[in-house]
Image (cartoon, rainbow, N blue to C red; front, top):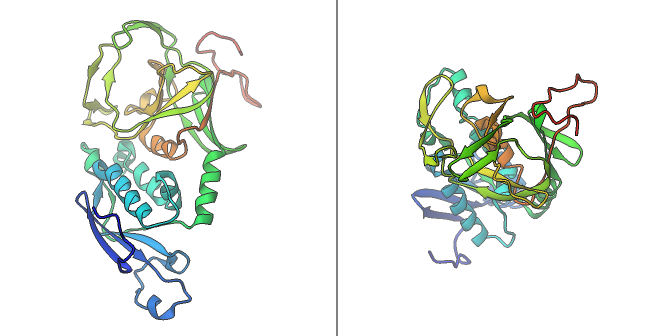
Length: 311
């Protein structure tokens, strides 16, 4: 693709990986003549923001990350201020809502049984994405830098903090109090979720699903209701704690009955909707604290699931 866009008109139509994206450079409210060409269906933000993206083809969940990457490539080619995926999504928070709504169990509660989640539509034709200005970009980046994750293992709670303010709280599953031979590791492994301070050091998109017990890949999942569906395409987060990567990732689980239990092989599992929310609040470098506190303010003492005492 030609990288020179300096002579392109206000309305730019480009075909990217099968999607048609319209980039509209919208005049400010000072230009009344040009502004009059927008009708009542135009996003009301056109007065405040100079740029927006109008989606002209439906985008499915399977195409989501390809679409976002291609869109950012195009946007950043045309803008002096580079934005990333997190900035784009936080400037358009409804995207997180759309992704969270693909949760199998949320759909089931609405009377829908969806076996192929990847076929669900995330972006519909005609939807508009705002491209933020420098001030908003700075605010979003500052907010993300102030975010930290706190997991209290025996409480089965993962919290997202912005400084000292809780933004989100998720129920999770954690590792079992057990030692077991895992073919993936080729030795006996302590399955307890480890504690420590650190940060997110790796984000895995298009994760391969492998059973660590027998080291075999799988491509479908049995839900709690015995329905077989596709696997979630939500990125996995890998923390490093006290300088050590234990291989215990934070990722979605397709079995809600395991939440609030010590059930996993050490990883931290969340429901799909919560995993999408967490992903967009935990870029690389996000600080994490995995702790084991049995005594909480104004609450009964928690069950000592690892027989550790209140350490």
